[in-house]
View: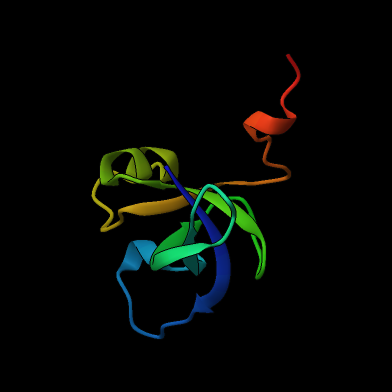
Length: 94
């Protein structure tokens, strides 16, 4: 799983047939502190995430295809959740 922030969207006019009507998001990877850690991921949106939102990305092809329900799709990464809040060790209840 990758912790990331959505920074943009990719649009293409020519793509694999299984990619039709799917939204591709550009996401900056984040460290545990919520700050950019370097690098990015392009992921298929499955939850309706938008620009500026913090998300969780599954970065494993077989799992991504299972989530999308497509056996032979050329995919590796999918957004599987939008983060509402991050609890750190300092503010977790005992």
